[in-house]
Image 1: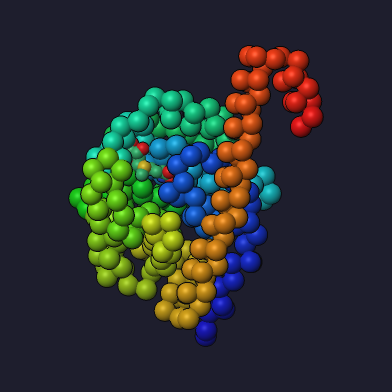
Image 2: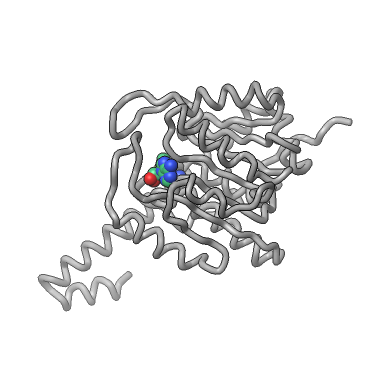
Length: 279
Ligand SMILES: C[S@@+](CC[C@H](N)C(=O)[O-])C[C@H]1O[C@@H](n2cnc3c(N)ncnc32)[C@H](O)[C@@H]1O
Protein backbone atom coordinates (compact mmCIF):
# COMPACT_ATOMS: atom_id res chain seq x y z
CA UNK A 1 0.00 0.00 0.00
CA UNK A 2 1.37 3.46 -0.89
CA UNK A 3 1.27 6.18 1.77
CA UNK A 4 -0.75 9.28 0.85
CA UNK A 5 1.10 12.37 -0.34
CA UNK A 6 2.20 14.77 2.43
CA UNK A 7 0.27 18.03 2.21
CA UNK A 8 1.29 20.84 4.62
CA UNK A 9 -2.08 22.51 4.07
CA UNK A 10 -3.74 19.66 5.96
CA UNK A 11 -2.26 21.30 9.09
CA UNK A 12 -3.61 24.84 9.32
CA UNK A 13 -1.64 25.67 12.49
CA UNK A 14 1.51 26.24 10.41
CA UNK A 15 -0.01 29.52 9.19
CA UNK A 16 -0.45 30.99 12.68
CA UNK A 17 1.19 34.33 13.44
CA UNK A 18 3.81 33.84 16.17
CA UNK A 19 3.07 35.54 19.48
CA UNK A 20 6.70 35.73 20.51
CA UNK A 21 9.50 36.97 18.29
CA UNK A 22 12.63 38.34 19.93
CA UNK A 23 15.40 39.97 17.92
CA UNK A 24 17.12 36.55 17.72
CA UNK A 25 15.94 35.26 14.37
CA UNK A 26 18.07 32.15 13.71
CA UNK A 27 15.12 29.82 14.32
CA UNK A 28 12.31 32.02 12.97
CA UNK A 29 12.14 30.15 9.66
CA UNK A 30 11.22 26.95 11.50
CA UNK A 31 8.34 28.36 13.53
CA UNK A 32 5.67 27.17 11.02
CA UNK A 33 7.22 23.68 11.18
CA UNK A 34 7.05 23.74 14.99
CA UNK A 35 3.38 24.75 14.89
CA UNK A 36 2.68 21.94 12.43
CA UNK A 37 4.63 19.28 14.33
CA UNK A 38 2.54 19.84 17.45
CA UNK A 39 -0.62 19.41 15.36
CA UNK A 40 0.75 16.26 13.68
CA UNK A 41 2.24 14.60 16.75
CA UNK A 42 -0.24 15.64 19.46
CA UNK A 43 2.55 15.04 22.02
CA UNK A 44 1.88 14.80 25.75
CA UNK A 45 5.37 15.82 26.81
CA UNK A 46 7.58 18.32 24.94
CA UNK A 47 11.13 19.11 26.14
CA UNK A 48 13.45 21.72 24.67
CA UNK A 49 17.19 21.74 25.43
CA UNK A 50 18.37 25.32 24.79
CA UNK A 51 15.73 28.04 25.14
CA UNK A 52 17.79 31.27 24.95
CA UNK A 53 15.32 34.08 24.06
CA UNK A 54 12.42 31.65 23.62
CA UNK A 55 11.77 31.93 19.89
CA UNK A 56 11.60 28.18 19.32
CA UNK A 57 10.26 27.30 22.78
CA UNK A 58 7.25 29.59 22.64
CA UNK A 59 6.37 28.30 19.15
CA UNK A 60 5.87 24.84 20.70
CA UNK A 61 3.88 26.45 23.52
CA UNK A 62 1.66 28.56 21.25
CA UNK A 63 0.63 25.56 19.18
CA UNK A 64 0.30 23.37 22.30
CA UNK A 65 -2.05 25.89 23.88
CA UNK A 66 -4.33 25.77 20.83
CA UNK A 67 -4.36 21.97 20.87
CA UNK A 68 -5.12 21.95 24.59
CA UNK A 69 -8.05 24.32 24.11
CA UNK A 70 -9.45 22.87 20.89
CA UNK A 71 -9.32 19.18 21.74
CA UNK A 72 -8.72 19.13 25.50
CA UNK A 73 -5.49 17.28 24.75
CA UNK A 74 -3.16 17.41 27.75
CA UNK A 75 0.33 18.64 26.82
CA UNK A 76 3.16 19.70 29.11
CA UNK A 77 6.19 21.63 27.88
CA UNK A 78 9.56 22.06 29.61
CA UNK A 79 12.30 24.43 28.44
CA UNK A 80 15.74 23.85 29.95
CA UNK A 81 18.63 26.30 29.86
CA UNK A 82 21.21 27.73 32.24
CA UNK A 83 20.48 31.09 30.57
CA UNK A 84 24.20 31.72 30.77
CA UNK A 85 25.23 31.02 27.15
CA UNK A 86 27.77 28.54 25.88
CA UNK A 87 31.00 28.16 23.91
CA UNK A 88 29.30 28.92 20.56
CA UNK A 89 27.36 32.00 21.50
CA UNK A 90 29.29 33.49 24.44
CA UNK A 91 27.47 34.84 27.48
CA UNK A 92 24.40 37.04 27.64
CA UNK A 93 22.55 39.24 30.09
CA UNK A 94 20.17 38.23 32.88
CA UNK A 95 17.47 40.21 31.05
CA UNK A 96 17.01 37.27 28.63
CA UNK A 97 15.95 34.93 31.44
CA UNK A 98 13.68 37.59 32.94
CA UNK A 99 11.94 38.21 29.64
CA UNK A 100 11.49 34.46 28.96
CA UNK A 101 10.04 33.98 32.48
CA UNK A 102 7.71 36.90 31.89
CA UNK A 103 6.42 35.56 28.53
CA UNK A 104 6.05 32.07 30.01
CA UNK A 105 3.28 33.40 32.29
CA UNK A 106 1.00 33.19 29.26
CA UNK A 107 1.43 29.42 29.24
CA UNK A 108 2.16 28.77 32.91
CA UNK A 109 -0.60 26.20 33.39
CA UNK A 110 1.29 23.76 31.17
CA UNK A 111 4.79 25.18 30.57
CA UNK A 112 7.79 25.16 32.92
CA UNK A 113 11.12 26.88 32.39
CA UNK A 114 13.88 25.02 34.23
CA UNK A 115 17.05 26.97 34.87
CA UNK A 116 19.74 24.27 35.01
CA UNK A 117 22.16 22.33 32.87
CA UNK A 118 20.61 19.68 30.63
CA UNK A 119 22.41 16.95 32.63
CA UNK A 120 21.08 18.23 35.96
CA UNK A 121 17.49 18.03 34.69
CA UNK A 122 17.53 14.72 32.88
CA UNK A 123 16.32 12.70 35.87
CA UNK A 124 13.28 14.97 36.19
CA UNK A 125 11.86 12.95 33.27
CA UNK A 126 10.85 9.30 33.38
CA UNK A 127 12.37 6.86 30.92
CA UNK A 128 10.19 6.48 27.83
CA UNK A 129 8.17 9.66 28.48
CA UNK A 130 9.25 12.46 26.10
CA UNK A 131 7.21 12.62 22.87
CA UNK A 132 8.96 15.61 21.31
CA UNK A 133 12.54 16.58 22.14
CA UNK A 134 14.18 19.65 20.59
CA UNK A 135 17.98 19.65 20.89
CA UNK A 136 19.42 23.15 20.42
CA UNK A 137 22.20 23.61 22.99
CA UNK A 138 25.90 23.93 22.16
CA UNK A 139 26.55 22.76 18.58
CA UNK A 140 29.94 21.26 19.16
CA UNK A 141 29.94 17.58 18.02
CA UNK A 142 30.68 16.18 21.49
CA UNK A 143 27.96 18.36 23.07
CA UNK A 144 25.23 17.42 20.55
CA UNK A 145 26.15 13.74 20.79
CA UNK A 146 26.14 13.93 24.60
CA UNK A 147 22.76 15.71 24.71
CA UNK A 148 21.20 13.15 22.36
CA UNK A 149 22.61 10.09 24.14
CA UNK A 150 21.72 11.48 27.60
CA UNK A 151 18.09 12.13 26.67
CA UNK A 152 17.58 9.19 24.27
CA UNK A 153 16.36 6.80 27.04
CA UNK A 154 13.79 9.42 28.02
CA UNK A 155 12.13 9.32 24.59
CA UNK A 156 8.77 7.60 24.39
CA UNK A 157 8.48 4.69 21.93
CA UNK A 158 6.91 7.14 19.46
CA UNK A 159 9.22 10.00 20.46
CA UNK A 160 10.49 12.45 17.84
CA UNK A 161 13.73 14.43 18.08
CA UNK A 162 14.24 17.77 16.35
CA UNK A 163 17.74 19.17 15.74
CA UNK A 164 18.66 22.70 14.74
CA UNK A 165 21.76 23.70 12.73
CA UNK A 166 22.11 20.54 10.66
CA UNK A 167 23.70 22.84 8.06
CA UNK A 168 27.24 24.09 8.91
CA UNK A 169 27.05 27.54 10.44
CA UNK A 170 29.18 30.10 12.32
CA UNK A 171 29.60 30.51 16.08
CA UNK A 172 28.81 34.07 17.19
CA UNK A 173 31.40 34.00 20.00
CA UNK A 174 34.38 32.42 18.23
CA UNK A 175 33.50 33.28 14.59
CA UNK A 176 34.51 29.69 13.81
CA UNK A 177 32.57 27.41 11.51
CA UNK A 178 30.50 24.96 13.56
CA UNK A 179 29.81 21.67 11.91
CA UNK A 180 29.30 19.47 14.98
CA UNK A 181 25.49 19.31 14.77
CA UNK A 182 25.66 18.66 11.01
CA UNK A 183 28.22 15.87 11.47
CA UNK A 184 26.23 14.23 14.24
CA UNK A 185 23.03 14.50 12.19
CA UNK A 186 24.75 12.61 9.34
CA UNK A 187 25.65 9.83 11.77
CA UNK A 188 22.07 9.63 13.05
CA UNK A 189 20.71 9.36 9.52
CA UNK A 190 22.87 6.26 9.01
CA UNK A 191 22.02 4.84 12.44
CA UNK A 192 18.27 5.30 11.87
CA UNK A 193 17.78 4.94 8.10
CA UNK A 194 14.48 6.11 6.52
CA UNK A 195 13.39 7.72 9.77
CA UNK A 196 14.07 11.39 9.12
CA UNK A 197 13.22 14.48 7.12
CA UNK A 198 15.42 17.55 6.78
CA UNK A 199 14.87 21.20 6.00
CA UNK A 200 17.76 23.36 4.76
CA UNK A 201 16.61 26.95 5.39
CA UNK A 202 17.36 28.84 8.67
CA UNK A 203 20.52 26.74 9.24
CA UNK A 204 18.60 23.52 8.79
CA UNK A 205 16.20 21.50 10.88
CA UNK A 206 16.33 17.72 11.19
CA UNK A 207 13.30 15.70 12.28
CA UNK A 208 14.04 12.16 13.44
CA UNK A 209 11.75 9.36 14.64
CA UNK A 210 14.39 6.95 15.96
CA UNK A 211 12.02 4.35 17.40
CA UNK A 212 8.56 3.85 15.92
CA UNK A 213 7.23 6.39 13.44
CA UNK A 214 4.40 7.81 15.58
CA UNK A 215 1.57 8.08 13.05
CA UNK A 216 0.68 8.02 9.36
CA UNK A 217 0.91 11.80 9.06
CA UNK A 218 4.56 11.87 10.10
CA UNK A 219 5.15 8.71 8.03
CA UNK A 220 3.92 10.65 4.97
CA UNK A 221 6.45 13.41 5.64
CA UNK A 222 9.32 10.98 6.25
CA UNK A 223 8.42 8.81 3.26
CA UNK A 224 8.47 11.84 1.00
CA UNK A 225 12.17 12.39 1.85
CA UNK A 226 13.28 10.29 -1.12
CA UNK A 227 10.70 11.57 -3.60
CA UNK A 228 10.47 14.74 -5.73
CA UNK A 229 7.93 16.07 -3.19
CA UNK A 230 10.76 16.57 -0.66
CA UNK A 231 12.05 19.62 -2.52
CA UNK A 232 8.55 21.03 -2.91
CA UNK A 233 7.91 20.69 0.84
CA UNK A 234 11.26 22.32 1.59
CA UNK A 235 10.57 25.12 -0.87
CA UNK A 236 7.12 25.72 0.65
CA UNK A 237 8.50 26.13 4.19
CA UNK A 238 11.44 28.16 2.96
CA UNK A 239 9.10 30.62 1.22
CA UNK A 240 6.98 30.80 4.40
CA UNK A 241 9.92 32.52 6.08
CA UNK A 242 8.62 35.76 4.58
CA UNK A 243 5.33 35.30 6.49
CA UNK A 244 7.31 35.20 9.76
CA UNK A 245 9.53 38.08 8.60
CA UNK A 246 6.45 40.28 8.11
CA UNK A 247 5.31 39.54 11.69
CA UNK A 248 8.84 40.31 12.91
CA UNK A 249 8.90 43.66 11.07
CA UNK A 250 5.52 44.54 12.52
CA UNK A 251 6.65 43.69 16.11
CA UNK A 252 9.87 45.68 15.67
CA UNK A 253 7.95 48.67 14.32
CA UNK A 254 5.51 48.54 17.27
CA UNK A 255 8.42 48.37 19.76
CA UNK A 256 10.11 51.33 18.07
CA UNK A 257 6.87 53.30 17.97
CA UNK A 258 6.38 52.75 21.72
CA UNK A 259 9.95 53.92 22.38
CA UNK A 260 9.31 56.99 20.25
CA UNK A 261 6.14 57.86 22.18
CA UNK A 262 8.00 57.49 25.47
CA UNK A 263 10.65 59.93 24.26
CA UNK A 264 8.06 62.35 22.92
CA UNK A 265 6.34 62.17 26.33
CA UNK A 266 9.58 63.40 27.97
CA UNK A 267 9.50 66.58 25.87
CA UNK A 268 5.82 67.15 25.15
CA UNK A 269 3.37 65.02 27.16
CA UNK A 270 0.26 66.53 25.47
CA UNK A 271 1.65 65.73 22.03
CA UNK A 272 2.40 62.12 23.09
CA UNK A 273 -1.20 61.74 24.35
CA UNK A 274 -2.52 63.09 21.08
CA UNK A 275 -0.29 60.82 18.98
CA UNK A 276 -1.16 57.75 21.03
CA UNK A 277 -4.81 58.61 20.82
CA UNK A 278 -4.48 58.61 17.04
CA UNK A 279 -3.25 55.02 16.84
C1 LIG B 1 21.47 28.15 20.32
S1 LIG B 1 20.84 28.70 21.84
C2 LIG B 1 19.16 28.18 21.81
C3 LIG B 1 18.36 28.91 20.77
C4 LIG B 1 16.88 28.77 20.88
N1 LIG B 1 16.43 27.38 20.78
C5 LIG B 1 16.20 29.62 19.81
O1 LIG B 1 15.42 29.15 19.05
O2 LIG B 1 16.49 30.79 19.66
C6 LIG B 1 21.61 27.59 22.95
C7 LIG B 1 21.21 27.74 24.41
O3 LIG B 1 21.58 26.53 25.08
C8 LIG B 1 22.07 26.85 26.37
N2 LIG B 1 22.96 25.72 26.75
C9 LIG B 1 23.99 25.21 26.03
N3 LIG B 1 24.48 24.11 26.65
C10 LIG B 1 23.75 23.94 27.77
C11 LIG B 1 23.74 22.94 28.80
N4 LIG B 1 24.59 21.92 28.78
N5 LIG B 1 22.83 23.05 29.78
C12 LIG B 1 21.93 24.09 29.79
N6 LIG B 1 21.89 25.06 28.84
C13 LIG B 1 22.77 24.97 27.84
C14 LIG B 1 22.75 28.18 26.24
O4 LIG B 1 22.72 28.87 27.47
C15 LIG B 1 21.91 28.86 25.15
O5 LIG B 1 20.94 29.72 25.72
